[in-house]
Length: 443
Image 1: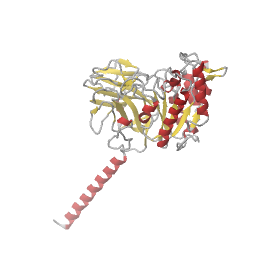
Image 2: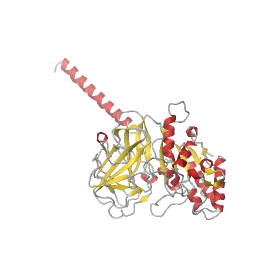
Image 3: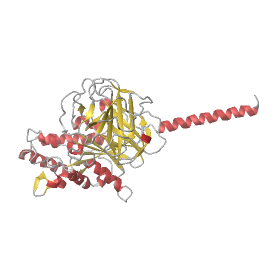
Image 4: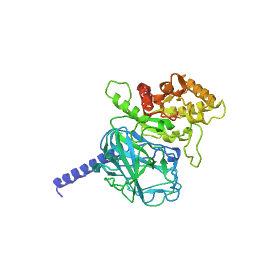
């Protein structure tokens, strides 16, 4: 072999080593995710090849798993495609989703899953050019053990903020109870057979007001550098807001944060995810094992601390504890529970903004004694001895002439849940500057 040939071979070898090294560096830089055991509520690692674009992984949408869907105990949704419509409040260049089998009693095998942009509001149709097949550790199918969840690999898809995203799953085999979120305030769809990558929407003849299996959508974003988790009950869940219109107060808050960006505001560039569960309490779990509608104390690690790049937690919880209170001193237990949530967040260096509890006279279960309890809890919250900062929803929504009840314009009619106008008012009185800064070490 001549010296010239030896130099040529050496140059080719060096070029190959450099190329392999660059590939490894790119793949490892893009594998950002939150880790941990699903038993403790944290989201497992995704192990996808890294998206080429830069940005920060943040939560764009979320919904808490609430329980096992009635009627699915025997076979789950075997042989059917579930097309969940979720609303991305923050845009990005790549996406990943979390699927849950928390309330399953057997392994759940998702044989095919996809993500796409919706073709428009109120439709199961997708924009065909955005359809992406999801993978899990590089495989198209994934088996999720009972009681656990899984994070998909990242896929490149341009997700605009304030857009509807379709997350579709297909399970070929019976799986038992379906993990779901019942009060979606959003229409999703079901089709017979594997229609996971069907873009027309024609096979999706069945409508549902549930979200099934999917519990989070994360995006790789340049619009936000952190996530706000709003942790609450039905008022956060958006009960009584107009279905399909994204009029929950958390939706309006997300819109306000986007509008503030770039206009000289001191508000941070954060996304917002909604972890409200209707009927949720600070202290008490629902029935079952695992407990359906788990207490705030039980689910805080999973639903609040388990998100991508969470920076702030907003807590609006306690009304249902008051409605079920049996003794005059129960407000002390509720406040102790709220402080326990704050300590968990502070252990992670997170700031906690707390909300005063809104009035509910004329609602079944209201009594003068429970009204006294609500006011005592609000007094303690306003004192600064519970949360790092306070948003006063009580003052914003109450009737000035009768402060124990909601103002008529803000009452949905059930005397507990706000109207669309009431939800908007809640977001509008939220001082965005409260979201800046880290949590205190102790209260």
